[in-house]
Image 1 (tube, rainbow, N blue to C red):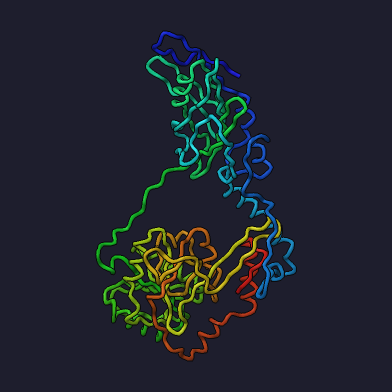
Image 2: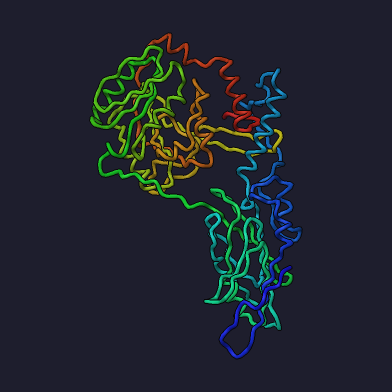
Length: 483
């Protein structure tokens, strides 16, 4: 403990003794904590036994089960000769994922009832390594001969801001105790308390422990680098708002029909084509960008390439055998997105297939076996406000308007070459807000016999097995139930 001399000489008749005690022992106690992201064993040491803070994320969650028909146990689809090695490497990757994504901010904090301490319970965010006043700190207690409070943190240091010229500011430590015979003077000092993080991360956090006598409160401090907005000037023309994107492979006849139908309704809108055909052919037309890929790279690789070249706020994804009709009104989907800024993806319906949408329900499970995913068709959550024909859901059909920057952050896994669609929404679960609308639809061209295309398009048993093994490792899944 290090004592400080009186920090404040108030211009009143009575003399106030202000004692600020910085606890160096706390610095030593917490020096091993470099980042808020720790293993479960370490985070248990961050909060003393008497603090009512409960970990909400743990490596040992209760196990989960996929029940009912259509259940696939993914470990049964791993290569037998590499089973042990895959399981071991997955466990290590999951441990690192937990370190990277867990936080002291994930702890469940139960506020003690009727305590005299005032503190910020939400919204206190600081820039890494930058000194910031802690708002709202105060004590509301009955009259006493002396008042003493303590504040302790683990990923930063505390100090009392200098009062005026000639006053010395307290040296920053992990713990500071302030004592005074005057409640108003003590609160004056608390109002000058600053926090400076000692870690540099884009987004991390700290838990502050605020105590008075037998009362103790814990409040979160978000340590986050301020980010700049990325805005799109969409103007008043649909051509500046939306780009149409598609992926083609050995289906130039269907592609030309699609382009012709687009130009019937949108003669100037940009069309981006990702093409991984075996023998590429030049696609002619105004405002068309065709990107030639190595042969047979796959659907998701093509999606990534096409979306990477979009410069508009939104893109409309269509398959190369779709057909624009008078019900394919892109403006209607844009209207939904603009009225609901939280939305990231809005789907429509495809003639002959109807309005297709599905829900994804994920249970984390424990760290050994992995999580459980349930996919159910035709599940809506609730209507989109102001649009009775639209409802929130988890995934939609291959006609959808995407918010370009949001979709890029999730991306399309290029390892999935043939049959893959819901996998994009699996990767976006928890980050993409999705809706499905019935008032916008697109046509589907009649199927044309194409033996070469079918031989690539048809998913082989090995492709299916590889995809399930991929989900086992990449998504840390134990099982998937398709319903």
